[in-house]
Length: 251
Length: 229
Ligand code: HEM
Ligand code: FES
Image (cartoon, rainbow over all chains, first blue to last red; front, side, top):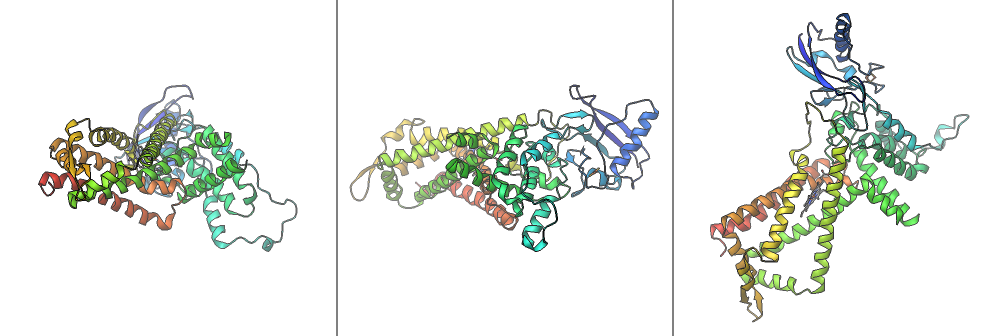
């Protein structure tokens, strides 16, 4: 199949970026999107041009490294799929694809499609620790976890931290990411003791990083490659309210 | 105190302000509509009701003050959040797309600000009565002999103007549009929405917006059609 690509090219953080058009001829529909970019890059290198920089690692949808916005949708048109798992058969011959980086002030472009997502690491750091006993593994039944809670925490834990939620949000808000990470630990007995401190400092770190505010439109859940529910955002809203009021009233 | 200040400076704190102020305004506009629908009863009914409200004395001023503070808080949070949101994405997508966010949810700032302009006109029109000062001289006598301001006649005279009626239809139309998103959104903001009630909440929001609009639209339409005079 033949496609036309309009790819965001930007030399570094401070450089002006712009869309550059490329012809993508003879693309095998069975290729993944990133394999298609590999092919384009080989051709660019052969022609003496700079290859398109993009992030990737596992290429099996579990690491959260890959990131690109295709025609305005982070990770592209296929729901519950990372861009590394997206295949060219989902596009039609002759399609024009605009490929841009994830856009947010908190995710500065490093080069082309590569963005710096270390703001997420700072939020995780702010989340701090959980009180688990180290050393020999405890007897499994000493700390019962209701099935529902285990499932709920597992749903949250499936977040791969790719940042598509931020990229899709009309306001570049990181609420789905923060809500999943906080909700994961807050739901389990191991994470309960530090719950209030955790939500307060994670939200503070999120605000500090310059993400926007949630306006309850749920574009985040819609693009999330792991289909994480906006219900985690409601849970965070609730937990933050409780933690703040406790702090206000009881110091 | 410091902790309270920190709460209201945080992103989520401002969302709580948005939601709680939105809820208070929502309850007020529902009550306001129910009160106004008394125009379809005998003129004495709405005139007696208005007379009762105007004579609440300090109570009336307390309610007005609360509403004013609520509105200021709502608009303050709206402005703050909007500015922060604009700053959060300085470089926008060259090609943008939306998967499922409703059109109403994407135009909250516009609907909100036009509603604010409408609200100012509405207060000048019927509360301060400075748009048409003749309203100030309209009096009538209730069955029990009390002399009261003739609110019924004032509403009829107001809406007999096609332009004023049209402006009211646009104003309440945009307010209904605002509430189409706001109604369900406030539940999420304070953490009371989940997958089980999401569908019901969404349908209720749409249903509410339609009923609220029709209820309001009925008044100028009835006056223009001559059903109320
Ligand atoms: C009587 C008038 C009004 C009522 C009943 C009302 C009601 C509401 C409600 C219930 C919400 C949802 C709160 C939430 O998302 O948690 C809301 C949100 C909002 N309102 Fe209003 N509002 C009114 C006037 C205004 C005005 C005058 C403005 C603009 C200055 C405004 C701007 C907004 C904005 C920007 C949002 C946030 C939308 C979002 O988060 O997506 N509203 N309003
Ligand atoms: S490269 Fe690991 S998730 Fe796509």
